[in-house]
Length: 145
Picture (cartoon, rainbow, N blue to C red):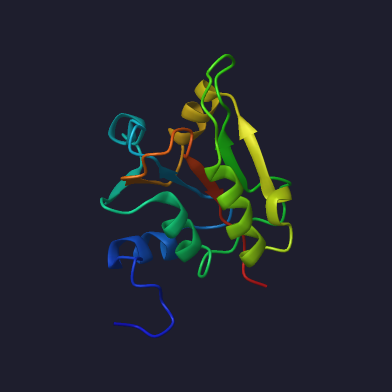
């Protein structure tokens, strides 16, 4: 056990977060995301039983977001015509406000297939049990100043 490290952060995930360098990206994937097929060139970790918000909050306690890009946090856009609502995005904004001065302004979006393309180049994909749709979030690592 370590002090001041959220217990949801497994040793494997902490190792990956530490290994990542400036501009590397990590995807926190919802339960519907094709993590294994998207992550053929990435480290794929399982966080079964956990949702994206609790993992996002824990990661942001130790993970600096990139300050050299306008949107170091990326969400998958809702497909046009899909009636799904995304209240989880409000939760993400609240979490970001606790960890980054930009709050919700740090968030950008990508069209579904563009998000998949970017996810294929991520350093790591964390597969969660999140049930909310369009709950995938990609974080770009910054530097500690």
